Image (tube, rainbow, N blue to C red; front, side, top):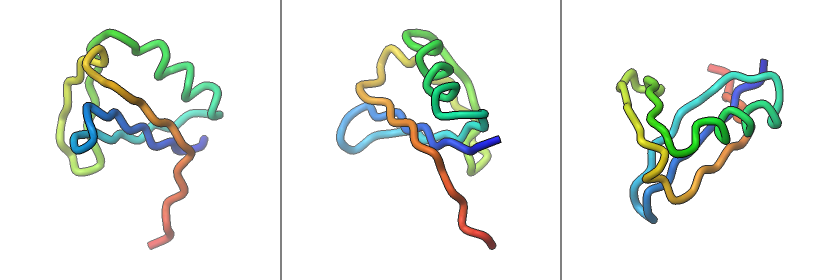
Length: 70
C-alpha cells in the first residue's frame, strides 16, 4: 500500500489535509472523484474528527507521501 496526502483547499489560507492508503495514484484519484459533492468524514493525523462537504472545496490536491523515518 502507498500513502497519499489529500489536501482540500477552501481559499488561499484555509485547508484540511488527510492521508489515505491506496494501491496506486489512480485508485486514490478515483476515491477523491467518487467523493465529489457529498459529505465525507475522517480523522486527521492529529486525531481531530472532520465532517466535510466536498461541495465547498475549491481545489483538491492528491500526491504520494513519503514519511521520514523516525
